[in-house]
Length: 146
Image 1 (tube, rainbow, N blue to C red):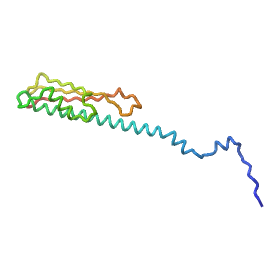
Image 2 (image 1 turned 30 degrees about the horizontal axis):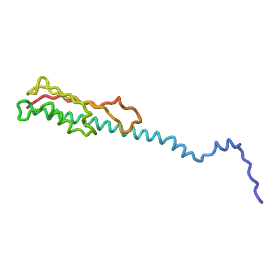
Image 3 (image 1 turned 180 degrees about the horizontal axis):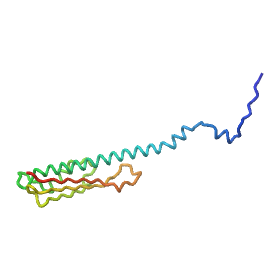
């Protein structure tokens, strides 16, 4: 006995909507850009935190460098030597993009206060989102002891 072809219980349009072939490809196409955006955002955030830490570390080390080099020491620290020392500690693409402000109060003698401020603009590697509002800032205040 041969079987007769079955009649469809649904119209063409309803059958088309019930099919699930290619559903995974559609889901992937919808979610992949979101996944990539989250990954890039995470990388940029990690890079921002790394550069902020690098700047803070360079400013703190420059403060320690100047702390033991008062006017009465064999090699007194000047603004130029502190700036050079801090710039060498930076792991930035271009250390000249960092602005340093060095203030001795009142001067470079024992007991005086030294304040070092550093600022730099954060430049993302991948410019999908405008992150120009982010800037890197660090400050160190120390007392000259030697």
